Amino acid sequence: MSQHPVQPFEAVAPRLVDIAAGRAPADLVVRNGRWVNVHSGEILANTDVAVAAGRFAYCGPDAGYTVGPKTVVVEADGRYLVPGLCDAHMHVESGMVTVTEFCRAVIPHGTTSMFVDPHEIANVLGLAGVRLMHDEALAQPVNVWVQMPSCVPSAPGLEEAGASLGPADVAEAMTWPGIIGLGEVMNFPGVAANDPVMAGAIAATRRSGKTVGGHYASPDLGRAFHAYVAGGPEDDHEGTRMEDAAARVRQGMKAMLRLGSAWYDVAEQIRAVTEMRLDPRHFILCTDDCHSGTLVRDGHMNRVVRHAIAQGLPPVTAIQMATLNTAEHFGLQREVGSITPGRRADFLLVSNLSDLSIDAVFARGERLAEDGRLVIDMPAHAYPPEAKATVRLGRRLEAADFAVDAPAGAGEGVTARVIGVVENQAPTRALVRTLRVSDGLVQPDREQDVCHIALVERHRASGAVVNGFVSGFGYRARCAMASTVAHDSHHMLVVGTDREEMARAANRLGAVGGGVVFMQDGEERALIEMPIAGLMSEERAEVVAEKADRLIAAMREAGCQLNNAYMQHSLLALVVIPALRISDRGIVDSERFEVVDLFV
Image (cartoon, rainbow, N blue to C red):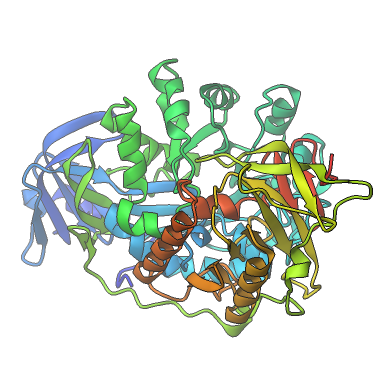
């Protein structure tokens, strides 16, 4: 971990002044770089920067006068000096690893600031779980700020999570040192209806002077949208269309454009800047959800910035959207987001700006990574026993638990509601399919690409199972996948073509304490153990990435060709995003926010 935690500006300001005035030497000087100035939008050649106490003291044409006998001098040799990248909205748990392991994975990719919403662990362990991740975040060598989860459960009345949080919990968390604001307010109908719990959480955040995160997952830009904005959320990452981004910015919100492992929402929305010519300073880039395989191999915020540049944004503009814009949104522009005096010395040495080729990563004035590899030691973080053993099934599950009884008088076929997966997007479709009845049971249909889906209650050992149908995975084999990552209430979610395989997968996860498992033809083809709240592994990110590769390979071998199908699987219980979902209460119409019958 960092040997030099960043000190408050006021504690080191006199030293920064002395260095800039030539009365004291710097700790670090970087010479002859091309300064990517996100304030002015310029790239300034032949620039030096001087650093002391983890902060920038001088940025200009010649810092030679700040070099003393003990000053470390780094030659930029004409490479770009880029501010450390910021991820404005993300969930560590989606990486399947702890905060420490997530940081180990993303630091070499240039991420030096993250704004994390731990609402996944909150749905399992409540406020205690948030505190565990908050405290781990404070120990990192980069900046990890935490947004207090706002909706636990995400939709009261439509699901029951492992915990429940209210305005009093929000008010308490606002006093913690690492809390930066309120996490995405997903209960958008509640905000629009002046629900007292939602209004109370937002009010507690505003009283603390912190930022309220948004989540308006509806294409309706009419009265419901305007009521939601009036309720206080200040940003939104759920847009998928150009008009979504424009509408948010016009209402004073920040449009957060996400590129995660399975969400590809930047290209369409960035047209609000490249075609509509809206002010780019009100657009922010983020990832939302990235699994470990993406982090280890493809990158993190550098991947998002690269993608934005490929859509036609000037490189400096794309970098602004991942640095200064983010910092200003959270009121941290005096701390991070730019290479300017007084700010934390978080910066990158980049040899090619368009593809963001990162040669070295510095945070708080320390070199953390070089040529894509960490150069510091980051010991693993241990979670206490109470954060584990959270998968409580109550009994051994059987194939009969996953059977769907046909309604009376069904005959040889029934018309059923089917959840339709949409590749690379979080929303689903509400499909209707005619399914065959055999021996009184409704059967899945491989020809129509319809599988069984089941949600197994895992917080209270009730043994309850809710069954339905899903389309879009393309499975052709006798298989099943079970996961205790099932946003947001994180019960166990099982999808399969065969009930025996579904029972086998569910029981396997119960035995290992959670994670993801894929079964085919009676054999375990892939397993990622996640004993921490059933959401995170205790292993290194590289190990988890290798296991994730085996999972994806097993899914493909069984016929699934979806991009990052695991993440599509994990969202099938997310009742706050349209159109059709499954919860412990039944099949949920997420446009009307009500439980509906499985059969039409």
